Length: 100
Image (cartoon, rainbow, N blue to C red; front, side, top):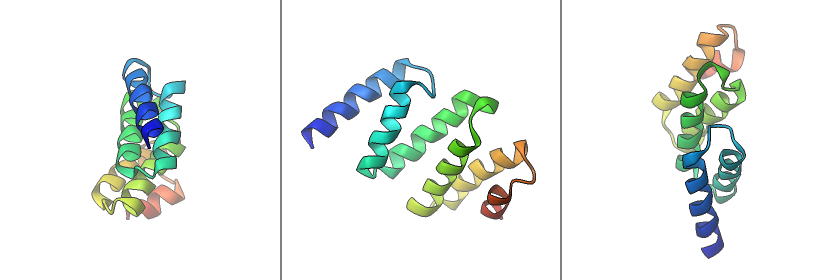
């Protein structure tokens, strides 16, 4: 647990100074996933989507939506990510089903 806390603090510090999608962001995503810290993971993916804008990979939006819906029971927040994806691709089947 101490090593997790140390690693988390280090990667959070690095990520604060790096661009979204950087190696430190990817490491932090893996760390949050491994620890099951769904709120932190969903929030970081949301920040990634915000910072990258249209350059954000659709998989990031889908993953964020899935976390908020399935892990955090936050359908309203999940819908925001599905909507962002539908703005890019109105016929995206998964986003369409998730947004309904």
